[in-house]
Image (tube, rainbow, N blue to C red):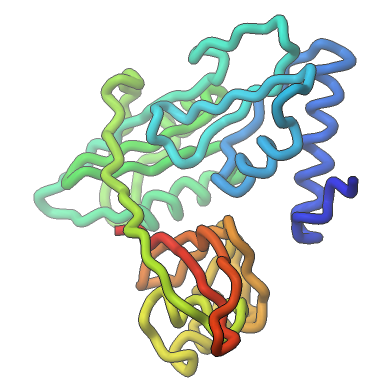
Amino acid sequence: MNLYQHFRKEEYPFIDQVLQWKAEAEERYSVKLTDFLDPREQDIAESMIGKGSEASLAFWGGSSFSERKRALIYPSYFVPEKKDFEVSVLEIHYPAKFVTMEHRDVLGSLMNLGMKRGKFGDILQNQDRMQIVVAGDVSDYVRLNLERIGKASVKLKEVAENDLIESDEIYEMKEGTVSSLRLDVVLSEIYGLSRSKVSPLIQGSKAKVNWRVTEEVSFQVEPGDYLSLRGYGRSKLIAVEGKTKKDRWRVRYGVLQ
């Protein structure tokens, strides 16, 4: 069976990487700790390693509700513990009475430190509290060097994982029909917008498929894809359930509330 047949070409390098990690766990009995993976990458890793393999897989991102998680690929004799994932939680202290801080402000400031996205997990917010989950090996660097977010001076303090802000993200499940599985058509259905409004947003780099900017309006989406449109939120295409009598695709999707 062709391992790549259910995946897109741009995902092949990550698949190859996972297969290499798997082989090292099976043949060299080594343990691999990855950077933070987005949910699509986690899905791919699970598909590649699977059950019945001599290599095992576990995820952890700070809590059971984490979205971005680090993966451990390990031989069957190894029993992973939470400390093996090397995850740190930093709480951001800032003048909340005078400053409004958003997810994108925090992410932008983190990226300006010169580290890749995989070193950071979830960015969590509950009213005025904000936390970031980071890889343990960069925790001290981030804490010492992240001094400003936007116009606000900030201080970061490490907190225990059991003090992690709980996510209240809920996907509302919906059903609909679409004429095709083009990105512009599917986003139009999900967000209740006309294609004439969606198309320029896609072409203007405001749409993402599986956390990657996609500017092609005719991009073909597939079940399991995570979608987002800036200003309208995030969603997931759950399933494509055949065609109606009018030759339209039945789709099930979730919209993040």
